[in-house]
Amino acid sequence: MPFGRKWVTNTSCQRRHVPRSVAAFELICTATSATSIQALNTPEWQTRQDTCHTARYPCSINQRTFTNLLRVWVIHPTMDIFLSVEIPLNCNKHSTCMSTSVSWCENVNAGASRIFVIDKLDPFFLNASKLYLSHFILGRFLWPT
Amino acid sequence: MANVDHQPLADAPLADLIRHRVDNRLGAVYSALYSFWSARHAVVTSGQREASARRDAYSVVLFDGRAEHILVNDFTRTPEQLLNTVLAERPSGGTDFSKALEAAHTIMEQYWNTERLVNLSGLISLIDS
Image (cartoon, each protein chain N blue to C red):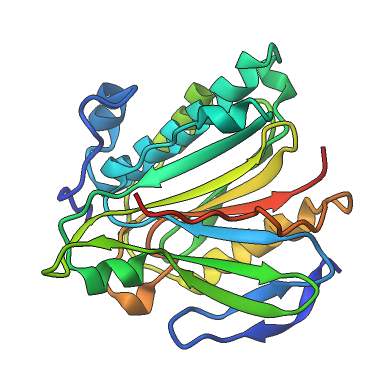
């Protein structure tokens, strides 16, 4: 069985299964208005046969909401840890979020299995309790080149 | 319940097609998905590879009160074909997160590849703009 032995519960998240004895599994939670999302390739990485994607979020919502929205979870397959990494924000003195982005890079030749999970009813965040599934999730498995 | 406070970008690729079919929040997500798929496709084709050589496997799970596998472990469809696949789906009621996770879980197990590499270094890079 590629999947692990227990559920991990996080107070801010829905419970989810931990992959164990498997490769890294990454959830990239893209949030706020999808109209602001762009996927870009960064030239310096292309020269290394890598590609980077950047989702940029110009936003008009307040910092607290935005901090809640943008998180990335990484599950380490061998240590059974559940990390929640908040993406740094670029905010002005009034704590109004100006913009931020999430980027990830990968070898273009490696390939990945990507699972997009989309809420048909309301694919944007309503509140923190519906944190990471309210929008679409890009689940990524990696395997070697 | 198809909120229209967010819509596909008017100047995004295939925006007219998306807006004609799903001119609401879900359409905005489809637009974002298409942008991602197109970006990946451009990278692959720029390397003189055929579209069928894509090593990314795409799966799409849409959920409301229940979850559906719209696309499973696909290696061959073009971005346009992928978009047309999801455009058939419209907003509907209910939100069952557990069913969505279960559906994703099923795909992950069913199409698991033991060759996958554990490599967390460089897996994620976070920057602020």
